[in-house]
Image 1 (tube, rainbow, N blue to C red):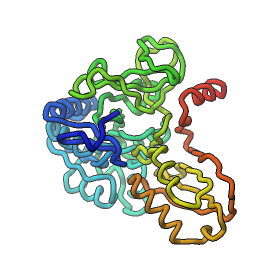
Image 2 (image 1 turned 135 degrees about the vertical axis):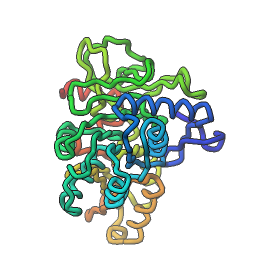
Image 3 (image 1 turned 180 degrees about the vertical axis):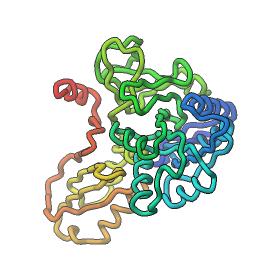
Image 4 (image 1 turned 90 degrees about the vertical axis):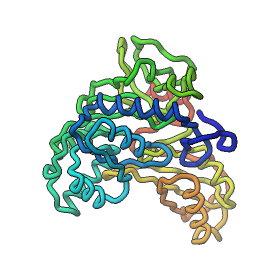
Length: 360
C-alpha cells in the first residue's frame, strides 16, 4: 500500500526498491512519534534510561524514528545503525547505554561477537532492557540473549507499511500476545478472504492486518502485512507472527520483493531457471540465488555472474550470494523459493492456507 514515487509529495517513507512510498506530513510525523513514544513506554523504557538503537534508517525499519521518540521518554538516545558490532560496543560503553533496540538476529550476532571476537562479558554492559523488532524471533534465541545479557527482553511489533511500532509483548513468554498501543491498530484476517475478523477469534492461520487512523492518507484502509500468526479458538488477542506469506519475503529485517526479483532476472539473457534459498544456520539470515543458464558459454562467465549480482544490489540492500549451476538447462522452468528457516509459507495465499491446514 502506498503511492507512486512520481506523484507523492513531501517527506516520504520509501520501500528499499523505491517502487512505493508513503507520505509522512507534519501531522503524520507527529502522530508517528507519539505512537512510538507510547510503544517504548509500554515496553518498559523509562526516564532514566540511555537507549542505543541498532536498526536500519532506510526502507523497512525506522531506527531514526525510534531513537527520536526514545529521546523524548528516556534520558538519552542514539541511532548507530545495524552495521559494525565493534562500533555498537563502543557506543554502548561510551554512552553507558542500558537499553538496546535491535533485530533478534542482530542481538544474537552481537552477543556471539562479544564472546568470540571482543572477549567482553555481556554482563559487563549492564543492559537493563533488550527491545527486539523487525524480524521473526524464535524462542530459543530470545531465551539465549535474555540469559546471556541477564536482562528483560520485550518485542516491539512495527507496522511493515510505515515502520512505526504499534504493539508490544513480553518476548520471554511464548504465550504472550501482542498488545496494541492504541485500540484499532492491529487486526487479523483469513488468508483466503478479504475481511477483518472480530474477536474472539476462531482457530486458524491468520494474516495480521494494520489500520492507520492516525495517518492522513491511509486512514480507514485495512492493509495486509504479509505476516502470519496461528490463533487458538476463543483467543481475544493476536500472537506475534511466526511466518510470512505473499510476494515479499523477510530477510534480515528487510522485505525482498519476489515479483521484483522475477522482473529483474527476466531482463538478463540466458537464465533458464533460478532458485532463491534463505537460511539461518548461525546468528544471521543468509540468502543465495542459484542460477541455471541455457547455454554453456555463460556457465563460467564471470562478467555475466557479476551482472546478476549488480542487478540484485539495485533491487534490495540485502546481500544475496549468486551461485551458477554447472549443468545447462535449455528449457525454462518457474522459479522456486526455498526458506530453510521455515518462515515463508508461500506466495499464493489460497494455496498456502490449504497446504498449511492439511500439513499441520
